[in-house]
Image (cartoon, rainbow over all chains, first blue to last red):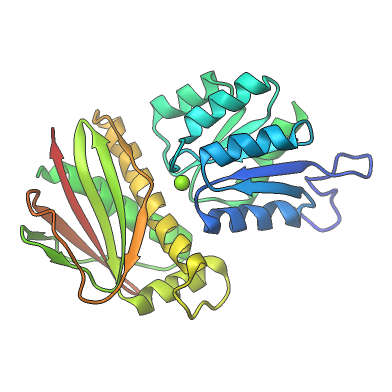
Length: 137
Length: 153
Ligand SMILES: [Mg+2]
């Protein structure tokens, strides 16, 4: 991502994509915020468990352009959260970001409506290119 | 405990630490412990539930935890605060996640529970009904002990 390139977070009309980050780790929230903000995304909010994440999505709807969603979380896991958000808004753009790369879980997430799935540890370029792909669809 | 459970944890510890911290690591001799385990200073515990159950513990000195947290955050962290805790917890989460993915490819089906971290001196973990295998990993930031106790239901 070179400096003179249009930032990934740019919509191309002078405005920027808005993100919601759902992850129980404040470390991951910080890490993802930094990656996204460096490409001019606006972080609309974050949540540390699935229940809070779903509530935030509803509250911020229809302003959220992209959601990053963890799987292993307290109170409500990421798969249940994904199902709830998709039930509420079938057009939600959700990318799963998990330390778990189990095939059954990845399949389940994609069948349930996730647009992409990233396995941690996080790599800046991978995160940005996956998000870019999802946003352009 | 079956030895085949331990290898994915050893491999994922080495590879995740390498990738995340960008340092070389060396694994030491595996040891077996059947009694209560004293924790060093900081321990991250991740539970496993399903066909195989038990827990994995990542144990290290406070100084090591602070160095790792500083490395992963790209800034000096000198207090074991919320961010440091979350960072160390996430390292344990990533190692466990990769190991569980590997075990699932081998045909073992189970899930992980959200990791928890605790710290303090003179603490012990007593879950002695399951014997534990300990794999020490030597890093430039200090030693991390990966303590795995799993059994088939
Ligand atoms: Mg998590």
